[in-house]
Amino acid sequence: MGEIKELPTEFAGKGEVSGYCFTQILKSDKAYIYAVDGGRHYEVFKRKVNRRFSQVRYPNSNSFGVWAWTCRTYGRALKRFEELNQSKS
Image (cartoon, rainbow, N blue to C red; front, side, top):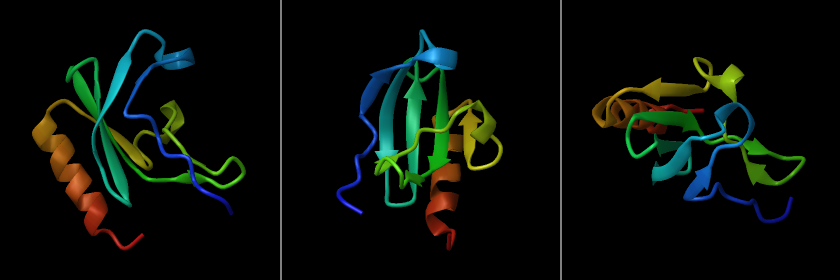
């Protein structure tokens, strides 16, 4: 597999998230935190690579509760991010 395309640091939502603005707050080799609309809420998720397209995946609505979570506060998002970074998978 070639070089993996990372997620953008900022982007405007499309499709089911049209109208929202996403800004990367933290990233590691295991997880990400994105602020939605300047901190209205936060999305925390595991780093998953779509091997077919050699790029990191942003979760869709079906991913939440499985490998992605919405957090109301940055503190809660940071806690979940730290939990994902300590996991073995």
